[in-house]
Image (cartoon, rainbow, N blue to C red; front, side, top):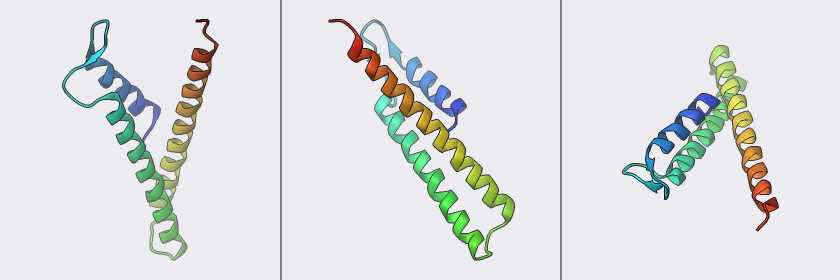
Length: 99
């Protein structure tokens, strides 16, 4: 599941793997790898929510499991949307910088 705490931990983990002025990567996953894994986790959370909802529709899932899966998906979607907005805002700020 992707939430703000996991995102902050992933950022801190990636930042800890860099050094010096050039920010050359140390051993371990790159920032791109961390983003890729986070995106895969988010997609997995959404798919799990869809699966649990479908199972609930045919009476094969416990209601608490369905509510938990849907809540996790909602938090994941909100986090992804917030991160997307922050990235777009940062990109727009970079474009506004004088050269």
